[in-house]
Length: 181
Image (cartoon, rainbow, N blue to C red):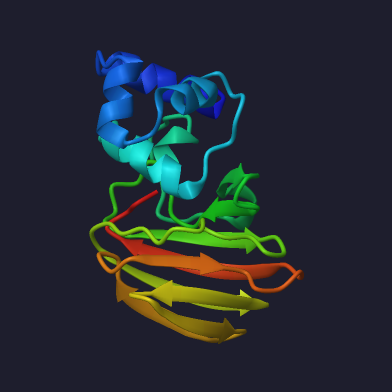
């Protein structure tokens, strides 16, 4: 199922009109209509607003539901999704549909990929570990540059954003508690 179809399906299950989703998410009616018809690819920030309004997490918008039967995730069996607008490919490092209270992602960032121009905030904590390349993180108005092997941890309630400052790809392990995707 495509992203737009999944959002429309979840909205319908909640007996929510597109206008109600617009009000609750803060996203325009026209934008949401285009997202549901898979005409535009929303940013991570927009996906977070939409998933919050639908009382779900971002990962659930990309997954097909199935029963979790293991605590192990083989590299070849990771749940994968991509956000072309943000230039990021994600791999889920926990079993899909796990009821764990942490979320771990392996992120492949294309050159100049970013979480968006505007810092966002939400409940919880985040830990980022740069595996390859560079990452700039802005937290509470301060900018930090991380290189291979560097890590950063912060409260997610502090407005934050990230960007790959290079034209070269970067790889990052990102851990959220509680799950936000």
